[in-house]
Length: 500
Image 1 (cartoon, rainbow, N blue to C red):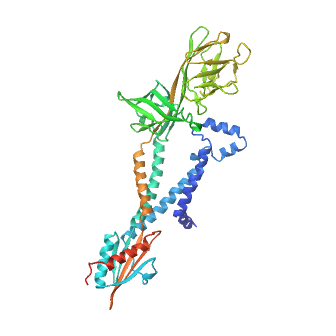
Image 2: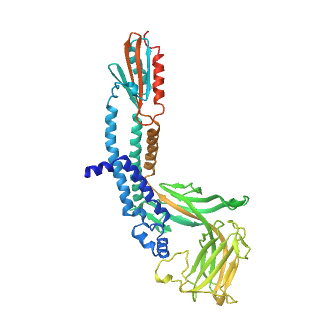
């Protein structure tokens, strides 16, 4: 039973099935939130789906790539590939050292077959046939009245090379994940990012990564430019056309300017820095009733739609007598819709407005529980009301200041800056991965385009001349197998190299 199970596991058919199953098993990782990427979203999903959520969590669908069943699939795939490739490599090596098989008794049964009678002698015909087949790249051997030839060993070589490189790619990816890292950072115009653990907004190290291997550099965002189409009609109106971040890297005391674009990362030693997102960061200053600054700085607002209607939160724990919280909506190009509501019509800052609701009370920051900087917990906060008793809303344009009621101070919108979201990735196995990928594609090309073919030429002296048979046989698909026999027969029949 064990021997039978091993034979089944190490067949190419099983390897292909496992590869397909692995692809299917990856689908939940794309459709469902993953705990390693966003644990808060996973928690929210389980709360919003109390029936199916706990079941999905129990079967590890929120941890697909770290689950037991996913690991079992790719381990079985690797075992299957190893068990398939090694015996086939041994057999292929033996086949390459063996002579082509002798000519069958009845060559007329072959897919490609030609027979003719020519002048000269059988010995001369076989000599010419052997020389011609060698010139065409065949390995030949001569047995009695026939020449046997075979070529296309590179087809199986390419097939084996493809599977060996597939294993290499898988192992290299695993090693890269163990010793590499990835980190994310949001950078506002004018800010400088230092490549250290504390400087990242989120950081995902490999299991064997050491912080001592972080490259020593700094990166400054000088300016970010984005262009949107305001001339097109229909769905193309307002679509982004270009994103360009002007950044400066500082390494070993030397500054180097770069242009960072989407899908065009910059490389710093072994790290790559990608541009993955952008948005607006209003610079907000909050003062208390005495005019002292209690908060000042850019606040990252997250885009909510294609016209960059953005939402953000400002938390002011140093305000007195109560802590203050602001929930704001930034409209880059504000206008009124048919209902008289303020909306944004375009993504660029053409008529920017910042609309904010104000809350006072306890922000909950002193409890020591981590909070999202993009959400405001209003459980212990009261929304401030305006003179009419309705919830207070502040409307600000850049350079404007709004006074808060009850002597709580003021809020000023100084300016609106741009920010970018950066993804920093470090994988020291990139060179090895590139080499495996190149050889993998080369092996795939050989296995697809090199035909495996056998040919035989038999000649016998008769009273009318040399009775010659030419036959060809393909191992696998070869649409030119018949043509190969016909072409060789024509060349041998018309060859001037034979003696008359």
